[in-house]
Length: 353
Image (cartoon, rainbow, N blue to C red; front, top):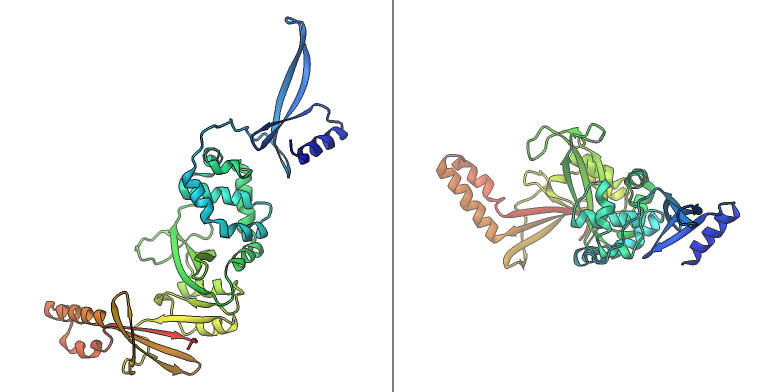
């Protein structure tokens, strides 16, 4: 047995608990109260053991069920997931030293086979990776850990800031999930692309391009608008020198002061109706992207740059579609001249030159 097990047993016996017995099963230890009684029929002493719980380095987990010995484990899927999350384990252990094994186990199980909390322990015990780690996976313990980790904003921030680094590119996206839970206070009704008038929760994601890892995941009230959600997310990020790239639907002049205050660079794709766009600017440069020819140019606006790109193939496709709509009667002929200057054009605002 490991030295820490023998030390724990010695401490218990010094406290007067003489009947302690520890049994080993693989890399796990289980504690029993053992005693002997006289068997009148067999006329000899008989050992009686009462199970107390599982022993870990943190102490005794009372009443946790003993997992039966397994000789056959699932290997491939869990090992693939475990190898994929290796870059996350060091910052995870630093931010949540007491719970990183439980968080890892839940992540592995829910990735390969989503299960409710009460079944995670059973599903985990079938994976070969369970022989490499020793998490506490009782439903009550997991619920307690989820509450603690979910409310620990300071260590969440530490974890995500360990992933992203100076000079990184961060992609931002906002999604949502529906929930009818009465206990989920963040679930609120708001417009969504599915046109469903249901309570929803917003999920903000910052993704590191350099490391190919999520740099922040944050849950926000469902009623908060996209831009407000983004600003609220940025308020909790302290990553000097990164460049944030957002979706076109998030573009807003109001975000530029936020980026400057946080010492972040930015790339803001613009909608075609933004007044700042100059569609008449010269496009003197060009490149080929995925076998598509693209012309481009840039223009300085105060302390930012306006970039204008023209996808030659996209221009032809959009012009063809617009003319077809004129013929069908859904568009007006007089609108063609006004719109044709926008065909195939993609614009961005950035402080990067």
